[in-house]
Amino acid sequence: MCGIIGYTGPDKVKNILLEGLAQLEYRGYDSAGIAIAREDGSIYVEKQTGQTANLKAACEQSDADGHCGIGHTRWATHGGVTRLNTHPHRAGKVTLIHNGIIENYHELIEEYQLQDQLVSETDSEVAAALLNRFYDGTNPKEAIKKTVALLEGSFAFCILFEGLTDRIYCIRSVSPLVASSTEHGSLVASDITAVIKYSRKYFVVPEHQLMILYPDHIDLLNEEGIKTEPEILEVNWDVESAQKMGFPHYMMKEIHEQPEAIRKTIAPRLKNGVPSFEDEGMDDSVFASFTNINVVACGTAMYAGMVGKAVIEPIVKIPVTVQIASEFRYSTPLINENTLTIVVSQSGETIDTLAALRLARSCGSKTLAIVNVKGSSIARESDYVLYTHAGPEIAVASTKAYSVQLSAFYLLACKIAMVRGIFDHAQAKDFINNLYQCIDAISGILEQKDQIREAAKCLENAEHAYYIGRGLDYAFSMEGALKLKEISYVHAEAYAAGELKHGTIALIEKNIPVVAFATQDSVYNKTISNIREVKARGAYVLLITKENAEIPAGVCDMHLTVPIENDLFTGLPTVVILQLLAYYTSLSKGLDVDKPRNLAKSVTVE
Ligand code: F6R
Image (cartoon, rainbow, N blue to C red):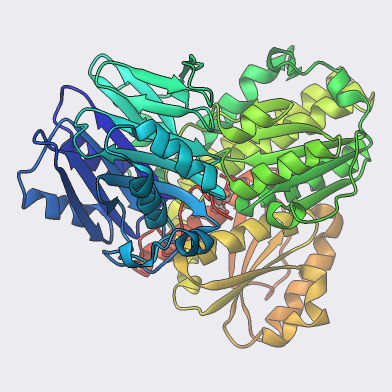
């Protein structure tokens, strides 16, 4: 949520900020603004509602520039999408940008009588007003210390103080910030995509430490004011990975990157053709003794967990529960030291998932994170980390991150089965070969794009759509329905096919699209019966099966196939069909595929 960028150094700052905001726009695109410290000590602020292109156009009207500045792209939480609510917020000598939520801002307004000083409806401006109240014109550190001591909630702040034309003060709690000191100045950002152009080396700003960016170095001070050294990380992808590379949208590019991303996630973990996680600090003992698995995550990552459950349970025969992190974090979890909690997150920063992880640890559960972003909060706080190697995912709708999460679950299922004597070496190898076949199968699906585009026509004008399937097919259909909802705004629901007749079938009427999955042999006939039930009520059925399936006459209006024979592995190619269906539906409706309304990529607020 919300993108932050800051730079101080020898180069002109305006373009660096605008380019950085464009890179970070997927974190929020309600409005955007910049603040630049001018050489005369004053601060230039420009802000605009809408996407960062509007801000850029407004900035072109002014020649104001400098060498030190901050920029922000907003995902609105407190207060509507207005220019006044747009960051940066200014109070006296203080100008700041904020990502996070100050939960006690109402109390602070009253206690410090700030009402008359506020022009926006935001919680962030309250922090600016408090900083200004405590700033005596000489000691920014003291003002920051006093202010953050009062704040409840989460925050990442970048602050300019009038007159201090070369430095940016930053501090964070929970909300992410990374920084990089380069030969051409110092940078801070809410994630590495905005920094990678300037440096592959960066560090995650430690929580509660004050960071001061100077043109030639960065100081980190702990709560006692003592300098600390950050742990330097290096990204293993390059700047092109965060660009469209000739594709019309990031989403399409990322859909195409799935074969390679899956390969990169699987290959480094194979020894003698079977999974090994020893290089990641997980020897066999990690997988030997837990009695149950608890998966927690949000959205698409949680749906990956549903597939994980459907893969692990029948093989390993231990219970796997999948829980929505925002529910789990406020529940009384029935987990203990015999539970392995698997947290799944592309960003590694989703606040609910992070809180769920902390709760699981407090219950004594061991925690394993399946995470894409290196050094992220969830990765750092878990006992074990299995990084997925999808590279940066920029489109708001998750695609390749989901596929690599599924791949990680397959690897884990195989490993647990081996350690517990369920799979011998040959069986494990065979399992992994099946997983590898999914990569080719996905490439095959990508070649059928035109057919899928044609199939998507049934969704274009629909108000509602239903996704149905049984077992693993039900697990994929949940992700398919979410993709359609989020980028094409068609109301879509996933139902276990056998459950329809217990209520939902009342909603089926003439021509309503039903995307039906029947890739599981064990329930194939049952699913076909359920499809007949909706067909009999006038539904338009788009059926997805394996290639060799026999399709009874009249059961569907459109038919797509996945080139996989083993039931356990149909998910990866199936989901690519679902992603493309959602993509083409959104495209045909003229919507912004990469930046659907009301959403942001990284959900770092509750
Ligand atoms: C949907 C989507 C979201 C995320 C969810 C969790 O396409 O991307 O549902 O999956 O917000 O995000 P991460 O994986 O970053 O924890």
